[in-house]
Image (cartoon, rainbow, N blue to C red; front, side, top):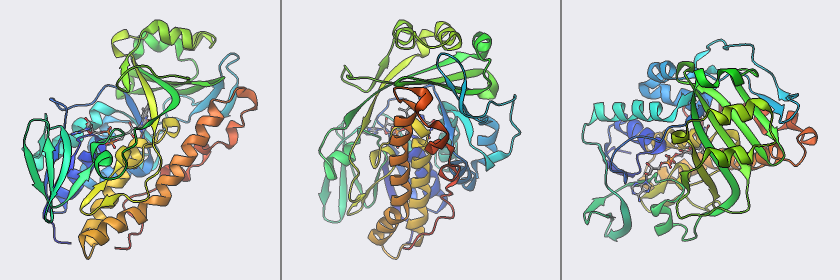
Length: 390
Ligand SMILES: Cc1cc2nc3c(=O)[nH]c(=O)nc-3n(C[C@H](O)[C@H](O)[C@H](O)COP(=O)(O)OP(=O)(O)OC[C@H]3O[C@@H](n4cnc5c(N)ncnc54)[C@H](O)[C@@H]3O)c2cc1C
């Protein structure tokens, strides 16, 4: 397909990777982001090997390697006894094998790398303060209506606007996302404060009845990222994330061992955020005419395998490749979904299974050794080489 112009809704990780991949293929890209200022909330993410290779293919290898740490072997330990349930305890910093292993990175650092690369190609590409409120049609063109009263005409629209996607609601699925019965607490601790409670190594998942407490180092080891996911009957509130009190987290994990309780005690309250986790049913199609979805907008997943951002990155790279190869726009958009659907469904289903195993009522009998997280093939998927039949 001959490159022309494209409008991307959402400057999250998926939207920015799509922007960069398409700029490099010669497209004129505009990204519309609702937030008044650009950036990402502070939290760590794991980056699968394949997602890392995808970023490297866009010229970001060196920057991403410098900003991330190789993910150590993960150990799953019992919440009261500390006994090893699965995986292996790391014996210090692992050998750095680049993108041959998964890595840990601060979301804000990855976002900043992507934003700088996109802006180096086109300073005006990403426009903040542009909240999409509706989509319309005028002949072959799509009309994007923004909250500021402006309208943009487009021939190709990529909806990368996350789990609460307006693009999805307008064209694909009017249903609201469903609460998944899970709360996720996230916080960032300075490593100095956390040090006395890190006896189990650099990356540890503590497994208790219906709850996990996962922690690992980021930013050269200076920060410890905590993701604690607990089953819950309810989510109260309008949005899907809000500030939480340290007391609330301490109460939810009060029966965990001394290290987990210690980490919670030294958690800086201003970094603690609570998320309700939401899911949606899979969509039978990802494009409607020249409007296509990617990342969480197309297929939100539960975070138990830490692969949501990786899926958004993979989508963006495969979509750009399909557009390059496609005989027509529509055949390219179809080829994109065909190339991706098995992978996305596999990760979605196995993320649910992983949650059921790690949050079992009895951690001893949960069968963690055979859980999906122990399958390396899940983390090696390479978006640069997967076949595309466009
Ligand atoms: C607790 C938790 C832990 C996680 N841990 C990991 C992990 O370790 N590894 C991993 O790979 N993934 C992880 N994930 C998942 C990951 O965060 C998401 O899957 C990923 O961010 C999806 O990227 P995206 O670009 O599709 O959407 P988002 O990151 O949600 O970006 C969407 C963008 O669109 C913008 N937007 C929304 N609506 C509009 C609108 N109407 N107009 C304009 N702009 C709009 C938003 O402001 C945002 O900038 C985790 C998720 C959770 C909840």
